[in-house]
Length: 112
Length: 114
Image (cartoon, rainbow over all chains, first blue to last red; front, top):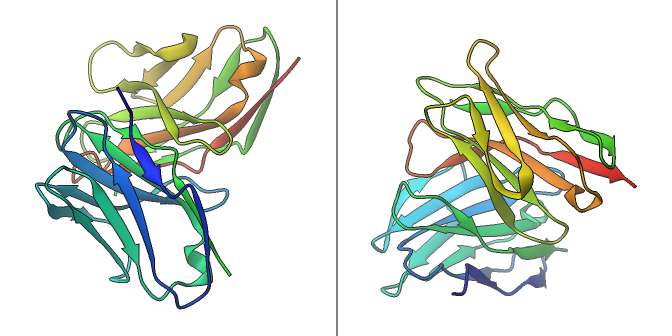
């Protein structure tokens, strides 16, 4: 049983560019949450998707957007990248909106 | 807003000695508290959680945590540390909005010295 998988594992972008990160949830899970973990910090909640809609959103600007597909996989998009967007982006899935979170290994984004 | 604090940046402990990683919380209502561990270049792994019931919670890999309401603490403990326990440990609390929205502490680096 595959756990939460994320791609790509590492990527480098320049300021102003756009990036798309992808997440496949654990089998049987229908809810996906995204977190940003800056270097030396704890993860910060970005948003949560359930039934293909954004259900909760943290304190992140509109440059951060997402999508959930009918197969429950999800994408995180960040537009107009800033140096401060450099971080490890973690995807977590759960069986429902209150179930235990299972995290993927993350996508490390470096913005130059 | 719900929050947790991890007052120490790094915890050093000799292999075989007891390990304690501290966490205090600030919440409205009943706290839902979690501990996660992160190994280098890896995602977060769930260790244990407290929702209600016994104040001593047992989790994965021999870890346990003690919930103390009067001290608003949720310290992580292991009776005998292993070198392989060296990692980054995060305390977290479920946000007031629920729905698995967690607020994490800044993390504690644990170094177990052989």
